[in-house]
Length: 415
Figure 1: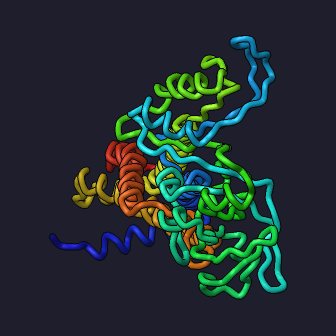
Figure 2: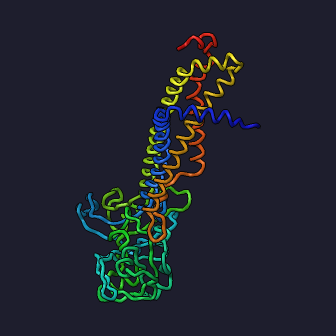
Figure 3: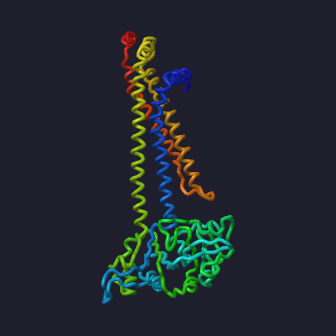
C-alpha cells in the first residue's frame, strides 16, 4: 500500500489555510473527547473512593446488636433495655448453619493512648481472629491478632492508620513497642491501614485499637456480655433471607419479640453494596450520555465547517473534475480532511484528559498507596479513538456528497 505524501500535504494545507476556523472546529471535538474520557476516569476514581469506605467488608455480611425494645412481649413492656451475651454466638452457629463466621465484638467508650510524649484518642474494640473474615485488614506493619493472643489473654494490640500517624509521626515499624491506654500497657503487634469510614464501629475510622476479646473482657470487666455480633454467610447465601431466623434465635433467648426489628437490629451490608452498584450504573449511563452527546455536537460542527469549505472550493473541485479527478478521489479527499481534523483534535483531548486524571491520581496517593485510580483502561481509550474516527467519516459524508454533485461546467462559472 503506497502512502500518497502529496495528498496529506494538501490536507494539511487546506486545514491550515484558515487556522482560526480549523482550531475552533477542532476544539468542539477536543472538548467532547476530553469530557468523555475525563468523566469515565473520574467516575472510576469516585467509585473507588466510595468503595474504600466499605473496603475489606464481606459483601454477604451482617451485624447484629441489641437496642431498647419497641414492642410489648410476654409481659415485658416496650422500651426495655437488654444486651446480648457470649452464648448467643453458639446459638447462632447451631441454629443458623448457613452462617460462615459468627464473631462477637466488644466496644469501649473510648480512651487516650500514650506513647512517649505523644497522645491521641482511640476506640478500643475486643475481637476474635476470625473477625478479619468479616472486615479484612490491610496490614502495613506486623500481623493481626491470632488464637494464641486470645487463649493467653496477651496484652497486645493492632492499631489503626490514624493512631499510628499520631503516635509515631516519624514513621518506621512500631511493632514491639508499648503504648498505654487507661493505665494498661499494650504491645503493638500490627498496624492496619484499612480505614474504611462508612462502617466504623465505636470510634472514628482509623483510630480503632483491636485487642483480644478475652483480654478486653478481663481488663474492662465486661463478663460475658457482647456489644455486637459480626456475621458472614456461606458462599451463595443471601443474608437478607437469614435475618428473620437470626432475630428469632436471639429473641427467644432474651424474651424479645422476634418481630421487633428495631429491638433486635440486623444490619445487612448487602443492601449497601447493591445501592452502590445501582448508583454507579446510573452514573456510568449519564457519563456516556453526556460524553457522546458532546462529541456528537463537535462532529456536527466539523460537518458544517466542511460544508463551508466545499462551498469555498467549488471552482477548485470543478477544475479537478475537468482534468480527470474521479468522484471517488473527491470523496476520499473530503473524508480524509474530516478524519484528520477529528483525529488530531480527539487524540489531543484524550492526552489532555489522561494528564488531568494522572494529576488527580497522584493527589490521592498516600504513603506510596494509591487510594483511587483516576484513569481509563487501555481498551476504553482505543474505543474512544475508534469512535472519533467513525465520527470523522460521518462528518465528512455530507460535504463529500456535496462535492461529488458539483459539475465541472457549473463549477467553472461559480464565483
